[in-house]
Length: 126
Image (cartoon, rainbow, N blue to C red; front, side, top):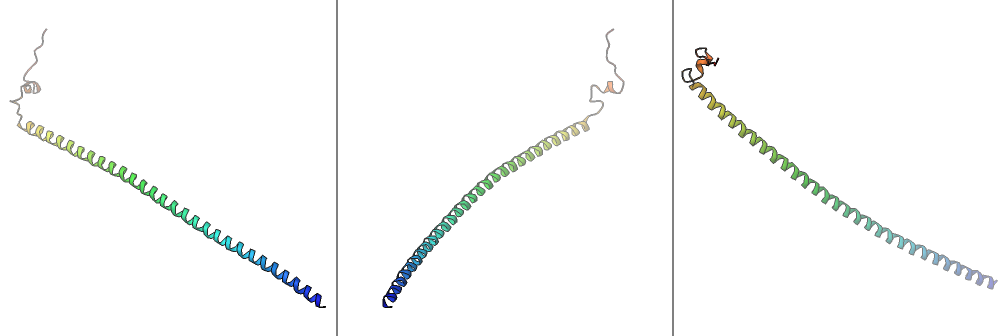
């Protein structure tokens, strides 16, 4: 009976040691998995952060390009409007001068007026 108790006790010790060893292995695996998971999470977060930074830089570059195009087009439109305004002023000045000159004209001052009102005739060679 005593030997059965010792044998049973030894079996319990072996079983307990095996269980303890398995538990220790499971705990070490869990700790390793959690560290790997934390490392993976840190890597993922770092990757996402660098992606956001590069996307932000790309968006800023695009905005800069669009601003350049916009300001170039705006300046071009301003220049064309200025050119049109200048052309209109030149035409208005010329028309004003023509109007003043026309107001100063009289039938007596025009050499060709006699042909327009029927008083003169062109010489014809027959």
